[in-house]
Image 1 (cartoon, each protein chain N blue to C red):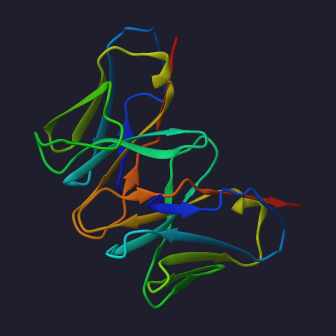
Image 2 (image 1 turned 180 degrees about the vertical axis):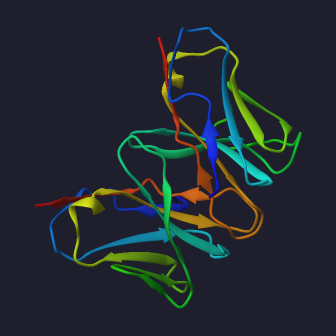
Length: 109
Length: 112
């Protein structure tokens, strides 16, 4: 079983739509969780950390379900500029971050 | 702002050449990483380092080596470049604990 799994997409959604991505992780001892965004031919950049109680940053909401070992990212009112690949990232202590393969989102006018 | 700088954005090298990819970070981070990214395979960890002169193998270390003589610099070495090492190489750094990693801009290496 892969450590971090994501639906690769692509998700093609119209502007203004709400879209949600899920990610599952295999190691129940994982401690920290992140969503990164990667634009085409660029490096990944942190979008947001994911906290146990869930957290929101503008149009973006991240949630963690430790019992089921998944995290989610919800994007409301999608913009064209949200088109990117979204990487789910998991950390266990002071070890290298483990990345999912990413979910590609295309927001269409 | 954290800055992670990779020495080249694009490189073209010949099969059999020795290739050096350099990465420098300016935030005194203990941990540094080298990944490669290929379509459909995601980011794969090549090597990482927790401190100066320390190195650990990642998931795909074969054909690569690393050097960390100073805390801010982490070099990836392809001892004898091969065409299957054509890829995007990404360096990252982070401090200890549950903190996020910061990436360099990437080096797109083509081996011909």
